[in-house]
Length: 465
Image 1 (tube, rainbow, N blue to C red):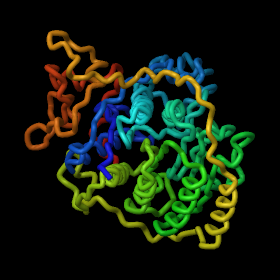
Image 2: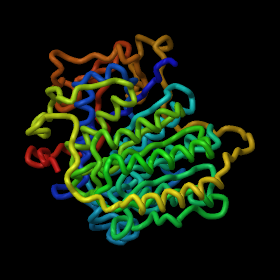
Image 3: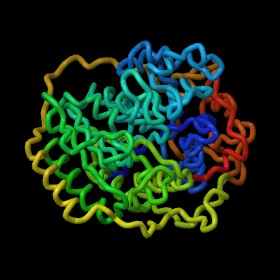
Image 4: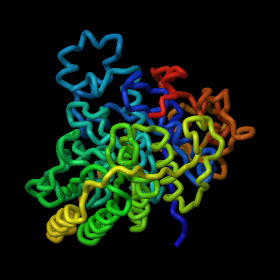
């Protein structure tokens, strides 16, 4: 079998957005991940794209108009004038107003929607968007550090081509926003493995199995503190295996929240990087078009480790446990290694507990059928990924930035600047990778979107938790 084509979405400004000094969500982890991919040389095997800025119109394919308009309007400077709307849309402490909130949401969603379009067009077998996976956002409110639900928007795009889409969530928190969006349909099966009990968001009871046509198409595996690699694998593989056997999805969306790793700032599981990645490897083994997304993860050095290793797994490429020198090497001390070890915390998930819930879920899954839908006129793609083809470029005409963003070369055409260091002319912290875009300059090809927040101060940036 030929090697699968893996596309990757990244925008150099993603790491600039800043929730606040004490807030656990740090978009900087996306830049750290990208820098590891660069210094491991994995980028050479990826088809790299910059995500387009998702339009408000595309966002309203799931979210309400007034909520999207609020996100477009709100800023730290005018927040006091929107006191009622802040309450109405649940924007405040957990989901703060920060500079560039709408542009950050546009980039996150742009990678997921754009990735879905590429899968639909068979332009990639796997698409990675580590800036995506914001699974808590609801139709008309923010929740759990999430504002726009890029996952739902990506799935809606996949449904234009595929009869059935499977959503898998390995974040420690329940994927409530995605489940809620598709709770009454059999065209999307949602499957979440999460901590359940007195833990955010408080949903994901195993008896929540869907409603109406969606009955038995929502799968929830409730877990307790301290689950280990072997225990997690013992439930993940049978559940996903049975879903693939009975449901037979045409596409998969895999949310890889890294807060299920041992030592996470907000988590309580005990998975190693390798244990977490075994889920990615197993899903990949089915050879189904797959959109791979980020999610939670609040000990950011471990988030970067996990998503880098999982990228290597998706590329079928072994990488060294010894981390290469990179722009953020000080984060990874004192061992400077890729893989982490589990802690000695007790596993509260007894074999009997896991077996009981596994059998209950497998019984429900025996009733699942691989539904099909009547053929219909396919809706147009979202307004992304209008790829510029080299032979159609006018060498005497300056390209618009949106055209530059949608041009990509084979990975071998990507170039790194001298000695693998950052290219200061390409935005300081931006990775030293450029796209060969006709006669366009690298500086033009890496222009940040408007209203990006300033990068955190050095003291803030060095928060490793």
